[in-house]
Length: 121
Image 1 (cartoon, rainbow, N blue to C red):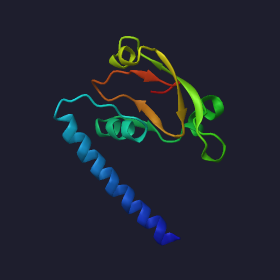
Image 2 (cartoon, rainbow, N blue to C red):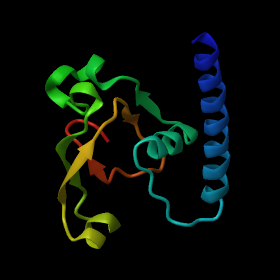
Image 3 (cartoon, rainbow, N blue to C red):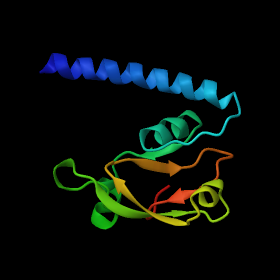
Image 4 (cartoon, one colour):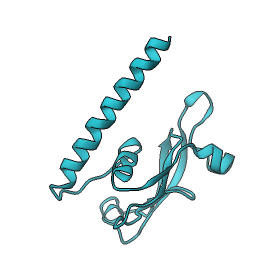
């Protein structure tokens, strides 16, 4: 069991290194990027953001993002009406399935908030 856990740590570290390198190369191309879940976290941390490491520890049940037995739950996400995303999907509120426990705490310098779920980016 310990060997499996260590292997997962190594694979996760390699995946993160690859994701960071890929993001930094994409960032230098000036193409539009959309990060969802881990992708957003990787992008944000790479640019200097901080994360809420475990939503339930800071927000309790006020902001439920994971259901029983790791099932996803549905919740509303508010989208900045002036954003490209709002124009593309022609909506400023959408219902999403969620199954995560982290969120971006502080935006990197120069980033603008687009969607927001409850109290989090």
